[in-house]
Length: 204
Image 1 (spheres, rainbow, N blue to C red):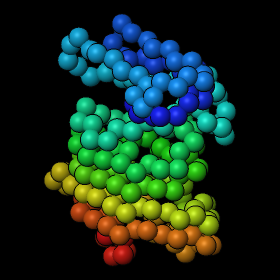
Image 2: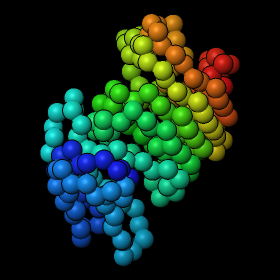
Image 3: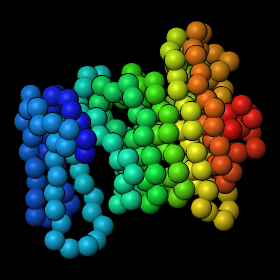
Image 4: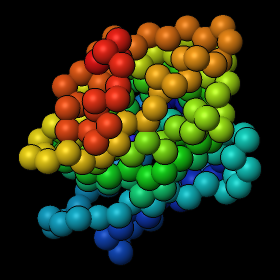
């Protein structure tokens, strides 16, 4: 929803109500709020954003965030390449968010800041495969300064039983030569995660 960047490709936004499609041209500079739509009735909608840049190694669309968005319930596909380094507050306080896909950040390899990214997403069923497997890609974060402070604070905490699984970020700490980790409170309060007991205390 929000970006101050130039649009890197031709975009098509289907608002999911069968009445409106918004086209945004490559090179446009529409400002921070680059698209909006008013719905005439209540209900669940699937919003689809299509980019005509098919190569995920280059920027495909401007960065979007959902900070404090209580209407968002699910992300269905991995984020396209947004050329973003900062995903801080991306889903901050999205209290109704319940699910996210595997490989959510796969194409955003420049990203280093995830502080408060899923802060207080208390209904989110977290999955460990939103980041690569540390055993298969031990140097994925090598040489970077990674900020995961309070990233998953109280994730899934509204559930009465254990659900969702934490990505094993702490296993990257043994590899990734030269990586600096900022991790205080990363999984603080996320006690309903199925592998919460395996998370080192320094990450809580």
